[in-house]
Length: 570
Image 1 (tube, rainbow, N blue to C red):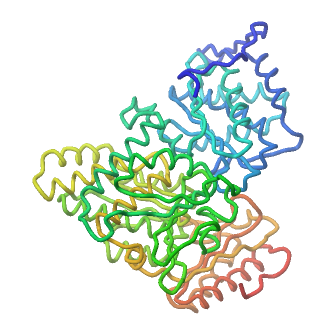
Image 2 (cartoon, one colour; image 1 turned 90 degrees about the vertical axis):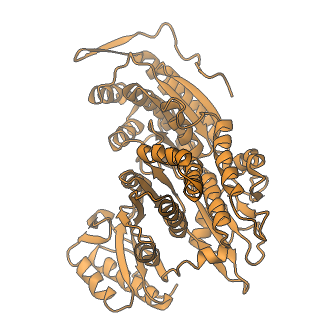
Image 3 (cartoon, rainbow, N blue to C red; image 1 turned 180 degrees about the horizontal axis):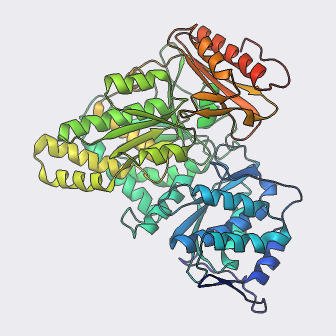
């Protein structure tokens, strides 16, 4: 894995030192070396990329210059925050030919929005403008270039990832940054490493071993407290999307094997990454992955390509497929946390954060049955994570299975105290909560961590997968896409649940929704392509389909649809 501090040989003595006076600060940048090495990672002509929620993503062969430049940017961000910054080379659930990169901020969270703009600007700069853009960023963000920089790097199992992560290292070293290359990691593991390093080890030990031990110890402690039932030895089938999740789960399984036996499928030994498997495939096609035989009522789950999303599913006795998505995962977790708090006698404020895509039944169940407040934010993990930080305990999941729970520092201290001071049942509940807190990866949604949390809760509550599924019944829904000339004609408000423009569209949707029972519908522009996404739900599949089609027609007519008019029938 290389030493703790990496240095590469990219610092030619002859390159001239440029010193720029900015206010009172002396900023040093070896611009000669940057120019020289940038030419070795040249930008293809005419390529424009945008740093989005998932960082940069495109075909792997177009990314070499972006990787080098993100190495440079990570050093500037590290100097500015006086913290370790992470760089993850992955394209998550995209096809194997693609790749991508994202930066991880000091507390394991996603890159700050103002720096997303710097990333886009730097990635798209022409060769001759590189120096100017770097100086601009340094001036705008008051970066002290004398400050030390430290960057940690991780990558997924794509064939292109190793070479691309080397390009990141080139960028880091040419700006004099130091680095540690973790090699193969799941995305959430890299988030965890960054968080550990910037909290002086308070959150955990910044090694793969440290991650395995922290989570497994909490899991084994929890499952010891499960009352012995017929399902004494629990087993779970895991589809690893032919990705990094398989490698890491294999390394980890012996740590927690006394509490759970996992059978791995699509482990990367023969299939292609994310091809006909993985959480995204299962969720969008509503069927099990290829390469996995499922007997009725067996618990199964799927990770996505970089192991930051998870969905569960099973076949019932009649062979029907049942998906348990992020909404139901959030419901299981928040209900359990609320029960523990009641048991301990703590009145902490717990909130569940969803997006407009959350099924209406889940929102109703949480608010009316569990009496847990639910909040809605715009689509995108960073919005959910940010909102969840406002509570003592915040649980957030997107329907696609990406999510986690966050606990405020005050809550963690309080629960630790309770676990030491309370008596009997209360103490037992506080101890459980203490272990659950350790089992969550609070830096990011994490398929391995979430899987262990879910397995622990099912064991402790003695629930089968069917009983979990039966907490509430999802309202039938339908999602469609409408092609438009320019997606920017649609703007939304109220967490994307209402259209502001074009004029007349929201009124049209309101009138259509009135025709159906238990119905709602919304439209939002895609973040990546010129399409408008339509979501509709109602009391029956037929009604949901009709409503989705009628809303699509309204979008087509009022928002500049192109191509063929939306047709009914799916």
